[in-house]
Length: 511
Image 1 (cartoon, one colour):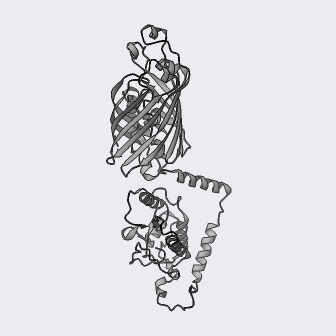
Image 2 (cartoon, rainbow, N blue to C red):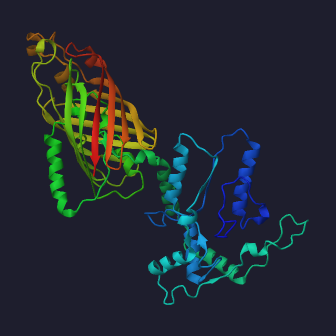
Image 3 (cartoon, rainbow, N blue to C red):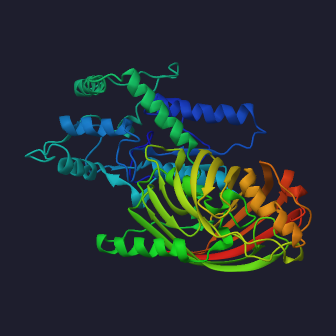
């Protein structure tokens, strides 16, 4: 767009570029030369070239994320002069639109072309007049508006017919208008009003690092809460109390054992897959978000069980921004503020225990259901996420359990994303004794010889969630996991199969 300002002529996606002397600025000439040399020097390279148009600002965050060209427009507005007419069209695109288009090209299964322009196009370009009228409404309004605006440079195509000496490979440009020189000095002065401090540079470097760590749009689009997707939506203040009460009741009373960490042989991360990715997308979180659904799965009746059972239960998920949540999958919790690529907090979850007369000869004693206090922290190295949690039951098995997990988010298409990764679980002797041990009473009842496990590793699990987004509101998720017992849990006479494959299906409606 920079080398031909004629608004009636589209810039075609062509490898044929004008000669260097026909470019308005050396910036576009250098880009064209780089493309040419790449194609000539490395002909076998699978080269895809993307040419963005003029990038200014962000469609939701304003001009803070991309300010360089905004300063040019602003200075032209301040001095009432610019290098084109008010009714000339300028092809401007926001940085998030550009980044999304590039990500789409990167993730496409097939590409029909090897050259793409990212631009607003004939239907999306705006006039310079529109830009300055918007500034006049939001900046310091001028009494005369933009009526005093003047163009201060001739159109380049006015000189197109001028003779160029054959011996001059790079002809000298015509003498610059004094007002152009003044504009350049004003621009330089404006950018030097405040030089960035070391603190500014550090902040900018951190921000750039965070942006590089963000997941691809096809990944962070899925906010998978409870092993499913929960799209954010706005609620009125009058509905918040009722929604919170309903979510609390659903979390504590609903029998959603399909994803309960203490009961299901799934990887611990599968109950919260994708939640951190959602807060990395750079968008301000909605005040409230909610989702309802149902899940059904074939899972172990309890940790180390010798039988499976079919679990069918509701899914309720309510979130207050990135701060608090109430969910049948993650429990009731609070995320500590101040983090971008990290999520850390505390949650109240639930262990469903074990009914009596289970295990060998139906001789094992029951374990009461009990709440658990969980501390968790996870960090994204996009597209990989590491997670650690430790939880303590208040009653019930009356012990400590810890999980170390890692999983990766893989977009398979625009509507399919796969989460997959391992999880390692360790526990103290209280937990292992209740679920895998055999005490004197249980041994006398025929459960087997007395067995008193020590603290250590319980199991290693490999899990996967496949999320299919059907529409803006509906999605379906399939989840599966294979786990294997280790250590004292594997040596227990009371355990069931050494390895187990589990899985289920969920359907969710996002408000």
